[in-house]
Image (tube, rainbow, N blue to C red):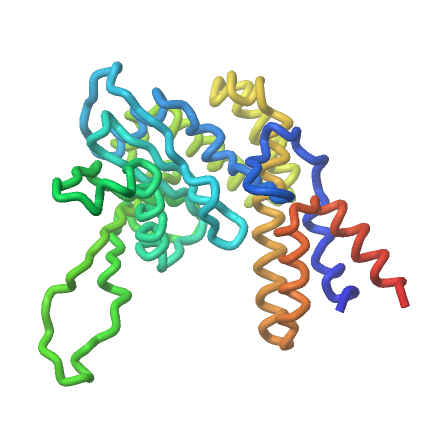
Length: 304
């Protein structure tokens, strides 16, 4: 079992560990890495600009923005990307994906329930006075390489079972949640991207990485070249100057982990090695770094 697990680890060990401040600690002995996207969009002013760009509206620069991203709601190894309130009237959840997940409406339903738990006093919902809550809005920003339209709406109701087989009449669902998916790749949704300098810069950065990968560079080389190009062309220049090493570690970890996880899951499923896969993920959930996992697997491999 351990030999099989070790086969999938090399692609994870591609970078030096990022500094501790770029890990989000959650509970005891667990640490989950922030993505470059959530790291970049962790400033209230940038989030206000992002929302205005996504919705095509304008807000006064002094409109308060409160970040309330969940730090204990995980999908596989990831927490939700961004959640924030605007003026106490709106609560906005934004997810960033390079591969569209068709279950995002359900995931965001779970996330928004937890967000509401954070921002309201649970005791008040049992009182006689009606509680008011911020209006929710949901976005997925897509910048993968697979073709995808500029905009698409994903609905929770599309996941519901059809009750017609029970002989029941068709009727509107009692619960709905709509997610606006926006393609932010270069050349797509330019009206949105140009209204958020940070989003435009991020899109350009990822676009350069994809361009270098297509030209034949491996991903690490592509990422380094993209960082250098963006620095020279004033794209996220200040951000990269301050955080170049951390950004490289985040990117390498994100992409290497996603690749390794996909391969591992597919082969484990095909060969019936779910137990091995679960053991691999258990070590990650215990808070072990990839190097620590590698060392442990080697020790256990030689242990009679």
